[in-house]
Structure formats: structure tokens, C-alpha cells
Image (cartoon, rainbow, N blue to C red):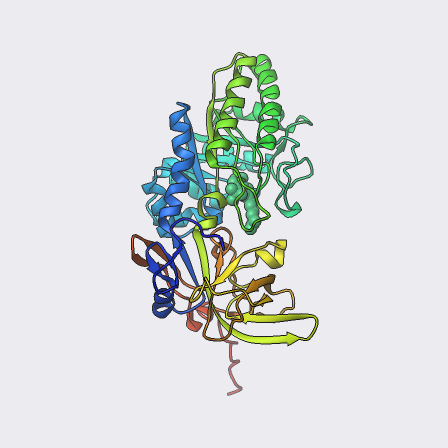
Length: 440
Ligand code: LLP
């Protein structure tokens, strides 16, 4: 069994997180429930920030809130002094509801609406990461109308493939995101940016993928971008102030994953940027990064009550829990793998190999295939580790299953930060059929 952060086994033999017995959490909040180890989130945040500080480089570490966005999480991000990346009006609204400092918000997205851009301008957020020509034109028009100037970055696709699952590759040429760096699109966008009276082009952004375990992709992306920056310096006398290299730093879900520490990513990225700036005789730009998963992924644990069991002799034993693809769609969507223990007896001996099924009406709703566990039954609570990123944020109401609550634990304290959805919540937007007026 591997334990993250403050997770341990207490003297009652139960899994404890943040100094809180997970069975107490279950007693108070029911199951399923997402539990976040706040101290671990803080540790991860500091891991990124302190490396930049130590190496004396101007930087912004922007938490990619798509990984897990709630008001309390955004407040925690503010406490840790990070910036924030949002990708929709909804994520921006959450940040505003948390009173996050607007100048530290960066707005992403490949199809921002006019309303979303207007919202960003109205709240004077720090930077808009422009993805395409349609957006560039719309943003300029809006700024002209409102007589304001927006800080922007241009998102480019540098043609780098990160080694990860196909669905979460975003930096390669054939991508829906960004201006292509090779075919001249990025340069055309740059010309518009530098000549506009309403746009303040701070620099360039790229994001090469997610759950990446090596720095090579970031380094290659930085090199490709610098080559262009050099051309642009010569042709347009333009030098970037900011280079944003995105997020994507991998975490350990199971033994198969071998992540490197945040400090190593940051250190190697900084060295490369410094080196490139030196080669091309440029000022070292501010380096921005956007970690999502690596800040919250291993800090999250989901607790489920074990329910029914189905044994298929000589084939497989299924153990069902009271959640599934509605609270964690990643196994069904990406074949993502997780580890788990019985929270009420994590040290008990392994007795069988079982597969953990969700409760949704879909054969693909399996949380974990073939995991060794003690023989478990309905008195047991299953703790699935590393569900902190893209779990709650991708939760859904398939089969009209209410979303679980989220609790934060730290120093023996439990704080409910998202309450459990109720059945009434599920129908709150539903309207009845209009009953036609009968003939009078
Ligand atoms: N910046 C940009 C522009 C992004 O598109 C993303 C993630 C990030 C930062 C943060 O990446 P991270 O550090 O979290 O890897 N739903 C998928 C992940 C999709 C990631 C999309 N973009 C999953 O559950 O694995």
C-alpha cells in the first residue's frame, strides 16, 4: 500500500487523512465523499513556487482550475500566492465568487464567447490567452467598444507530441488548440497583436499535453518557440515579456507511474529558457506555468461504501461501490488506473483479486480492474487514492446520481466545502409539461 501526504493508518487501524479518521468522515458526511488533504496541496504549491523563487526567475505559477474548481479551492490557491487559470465563464465566476485577485487570473479556451470575453474585460482580469483568429478579432472589437486595452498571450501549437494518452495531447500540429507555429499562423496573429491599439501582447503560450513524466517535451517546445521569437525580434523588433509553457506535470496514480519532482521540472525548464535567451541574446522572459493535476491529484481520495458482489466463477469477481463514472469518469474515458484500500482495515491481508464496479447502468462503469484486496463486503469502505484532479470537476449526473460532497481535512479538522447534491437539486432546472388549457 502506498500512502500520500498526511495519509496514515491510525491506532484504530483505520485510514486517516489530515489527522482525521476517514470512518468519522463517512459517519458525518456519508458516501461517496471526496476528501482533500490540504497540507499536501500546500506542499505541492510551494514545491513549484519555491523553485522559481530560489532560482531568482520572474514567474507565475497559475493553478489550472479545470482540475478542481470550487470556491474553497480557489481561496486556498490565493493563500498560497499562486495565480489562476480559468477556461470558461463558469470557472471565472467561481474565481470571482472566491474574490480571487483579478489581476492574477488568466483566461483560456478555444471557443470563448463574446459574453465570456466581455465578462473578462469587465472584471479587468490579468490576461487573456487568445487561441485563434476569430477570438483575436472579437476581442479587439470588444476592447475598441469598451475603450480598454487587454493583456494577451497567443497560444501556439509548437508541433511537439507529449508521451501520454491521445485524448490529452494538445501541443501537436493536428490540434483544435492554438495558432500553428510552423505554418505562419502564429506570426500572422503576432502581427495583429503588436500593431493593435487595444491589445497588449505580453507573449506566447503553449501547452503540450497532460500527465507527462519527462522534461524533454517542454524543452523541445521552448527551443521551437525561441527560434521563432528570434525571427520575430529581427523582423518586428518584438520581444516577449512572458513565456507560458503550460501545465501537464505527471503524478503517480499507481506503481506504473514514475513522476519527477516539481523542482526538477521547473529547474530544467528554467535552465533551458535561460540558455535559449542567451543564445539569441534576449532578455530572460517571465516564465509562467499552469499545473493542475500535480497540485491536487494525489491530495484527493474518494471514499465509497462497498455494496453488492457478483462472482463469475473462473472469470472474475466484481465488487460494486455506491459511486462510479458519475464521480470519476477517468477510468471509463481514458482507461485511467487507480489504487485503493479498505479504509476501515487497510492493513488486512490480501485475500483475492476483485474488480471494482460503479453503480451506473453501463458495463464500462468500472473504477478499477483486478485489484488485490482483503475479501470485502457491505461493512467495508473503499478508499480510492489520487482522485483529486478531474474527478469532481468532471463529475456528472448520469443516471441522476447526485454529486458527492467535498471535504477538506487539515490538522485534525474537517471542513465541508461542497455539500452533497440532493434529489431536489437534480430537478431544480426541470420544468413540467405545460398543461394545455382545456376547451372552455
Ligand atoms: N494549461 C492548459 C492550457 C491546459 O489545457 C491544461 C489541461 C492545463 C494547463 C493543466 O494540465 P495538468 O497540469 O492538469 O495536466 N481531463 C483530463 C485532463 C485534461 C487536461 C486538459 N488541459 C484527465 O482527466 O486526465
